[in-house]
Amino acid sequence: MSLSDAPSSALHVMIVGEAGVGKRSFVSQLEDVWGESQMFMENEYIWTIRDCEVIFHITDITQDSVSDRALQIRIGECDAFILMHLVEDKESFEVLPLIKDIILKEKGMETDLPIFVVGYRVDCKEFVTESKVACLVVWDWMMNYREVFENNMKHVTKLCGDIMSSCQAPTAVAANTYTVEE
Image (cartoon, rainbow, N blue to C red; front, side, top):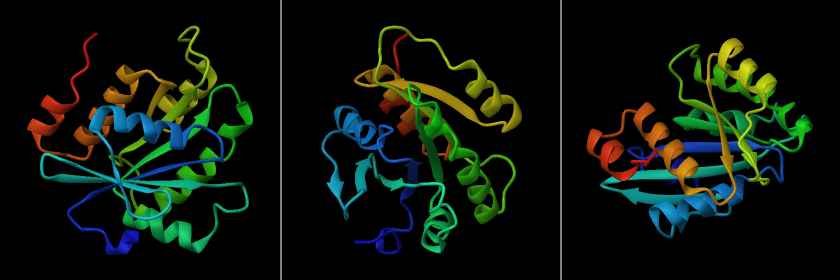
């Protein structure tokens, strides 16, 4: 089943970034939160959460592939976006401004588009947000920035709840499924 064959009432979330930045690891952590997923095709995963189908589409990009027409069409069909980079690899962030601009162009929106920029961290020793990247994303791009540690369910659960809430999912889903204890 391809993106165009998926139910139109589903919430489509694109996870995009360079290869090796933690996109598949993040999706595997979602299975700890939501249970085992169904797999549409390679790189497409679906969960049904209280009558809401949530489909994650993993997309690897490079500087050269951001102008690909197939990528632009897929962007047009998605509802929310996670732009992921690896905190330990500063160069993995460099392609994200390009994809952000393409998303805004394809969606024809400047504000209120659920885009989350996520710094994936393999090193869980301490939580220190990369201030330069966080400031750029929050203040210049006016978007959400999160850092997610590998194998930290609290961060994954919070991000999932924020995505569902920003996409105006039913209140019961956002309130009951994704609560995070501080």
